[in-house]
Image (tube, rainbow, N blue to C red; front, side, top):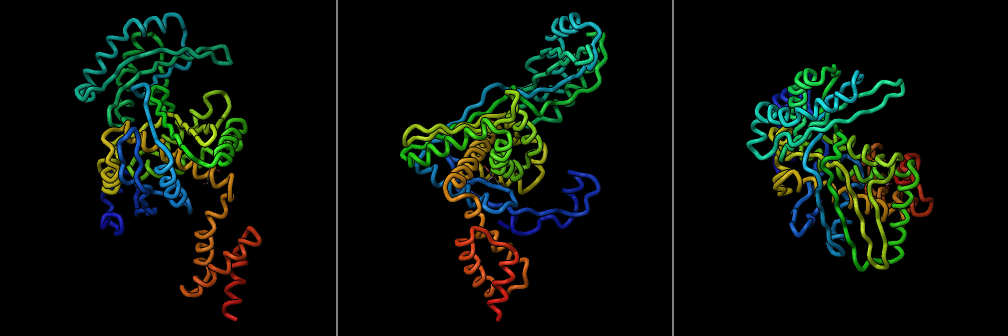
Length: 392
Ligand code: MEV
């Protein structure tokens, strides 16, 4: 607990290891949610780093609901990360693909003997090399080489980038073409995580309303973005707590949400009488070794609390929490509305911005809740008026 409640960084040593020009640390709340069981394995505590009011409360309430009404399963298909080597304007399309594919085994073996040597020893390494040709609107053709790297339990951005940079001059020689850039792709369709929650014995009307709410996000991109923002509330919070790159997760998930040519909700809920089944899938690319996970003491603590044994398990937990967060949001939206759940903390925040003493805040909170119940909204002005009344 000391690790969480006190500022553990007297010096800028860690910050200086992570970024440049660090002048201090910026703290965010670190919360815990109750555990969940996925594929019959229990994950006892869910660490979350998030500043947004009501996310943790909604999650905790609905984890308990799901634990008593349902089961969670998860799976992962595919097994690697995509590194890309880009040739923006190739002269000879036919020979480009042929030449690269002809030396594919040689390229894989060279990469595995050099930048991926230790990854290979851990059972990973470069697994495949493929070629894509993309027509440009100006009549030119782009060539893209995909290097598929299994990074085992690391997120592996560095090793993928190094492997691509190592291979770039070699494939330039082999193809006779000039590459412009190479880097990993955060849109990693080669490793997709799928989670499924099945709830039994729930209110039929609620189940049907949640199904309808998830359908809205399939058809209306304006709603889909907000729907997915709620999912990312949960996913990002664990990503952040465990020292993973949540911007990479966000980018990949949003890319996946647009895979059919229109941006859509990342989850689907299907009602069948008293049963409600929710699914969510996407490229949840995270690690439990390497990067910040190893050097940030609170991230290491979060991973210990979670008790995940592989990056796959961490992806399962992250996907599940995203789906539960989505269930929590949809459940609130199709019943009381979202404002009610947010209100108590929102009112506390409003009062914090005044000069009210602690006993005044307590009394004012009760009065403001009454105002919300009748008017359905409360403003900073209401908070000031209530205080004036209390003091008169
Ligand atoms: C707010 O952070 C997230 C929600 O807007 C998600 C949703 O509307 O589904 C409540």
